[in-house]
Length: 260
Image 1 (cartoon, one colour):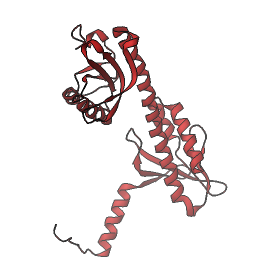
Image 2 (tube, rainbow, N blue to C red; image 1 turned 90 degrees about the horizontal axis):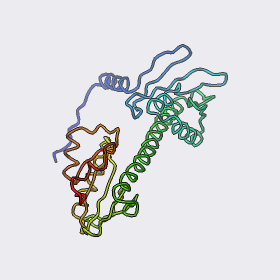
Image 3 (cartoon, rainbow, N blue to C red; image 1 turned 45 degrees about the horizontal axis):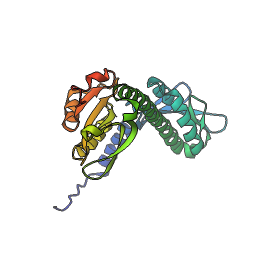
Image 4 (cartoon, rainbow, N blue to C red; image 1 turned 180 degrees about the vertical axis):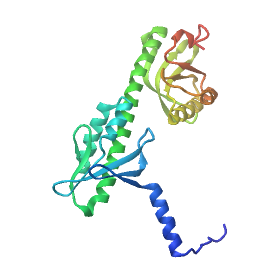
């Protein structure tokens, strides 16, 4: 590698660049009672986190104006948000009134810290709500999957939440497994959503299971509301035996009587 080059610029130019960068990251505007600050962090949905500051009887009041609650409401995760927000507020010494995250009686010298703390808690609460909601949806989807497989193969043949070993000897969790002793093989099923992490996880898992010592058929089961684009379906098909839709009839998943 070559030596680092250091460019010397006039202090006034550096000052202008610094102010420009700061202005693009953090913005503020006056409100009816105080001012609002747009922070360089975002909710899972992509909206910027805004924190409001208003004068109080003793010090300042810093709050998220219920923005985190509204973000959670849009994804149907209000109860999950309230649980997460209360836990986080208790941990950070903040208040939560079931809709708004607040810091009360903040001295002016502590305003910057309070703004950062309220904004981060609001964002984290929405993120945790989204994660818990996704987990709940996954669990419901798993129940539907197991019910469909039990109807097809019988309850005794189906194992939910199984662990299987791949070609690398690594153990992988799958949502369901069907054993077929007569054919000396097993069929494993993992629910996949449109989230990139879900697609990558199932692809990696199934790629390893394709090399397992025990013959393993691999079914990637699309969540019924998962709008997975064609490119990602093609990617999944490289590792999966089949990519099927949870909302379709299980009889359509297996093209032959041997469930191949």
